[in-house]
Length: 141
Image 1 (cartoon, rainbow, N blue to C red):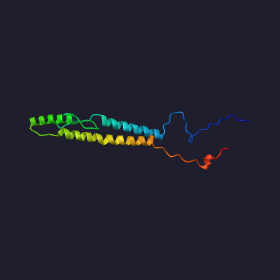
Image 2 (cartoon, rainbow, N blue to C red):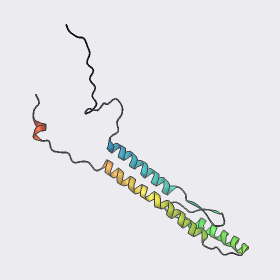
Image 3 (cartoon, helix red, strand yellow):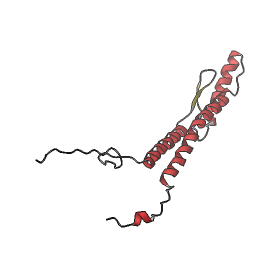
Image 4 (spheres, helix red, strand yellow):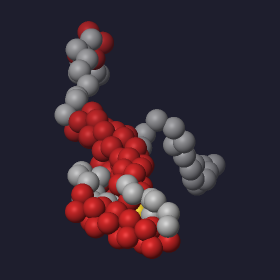
């Protein structure tokens, strides 16, 4: 008597199923590095604003370069306001802007650096291919 039982085999290891799009580790590293690079460039490009001791908002430039014109105008306005109150606070906007741009650069430049190094590693550097061994070149039966 023959049995018509069906045997179901399941492959839990070894082979990959290509049903869904699978991202390689190199592609994932390139994607993360690109995101870091873009975030760092945006952080350096967006205008840095700071608030002085007299609650004036000052545009300090970007992470690439500081703006001295608005800082000078704010210092002049602070000096006139301080003279009217009888207190001296010259140079407040300059020091606040310097601190704000330094804080921005402290996190934006490392993101740019990590992103650039990561993209270089993921896109340019390739692994050395191994030479085929005698076992790999043997004809299979």
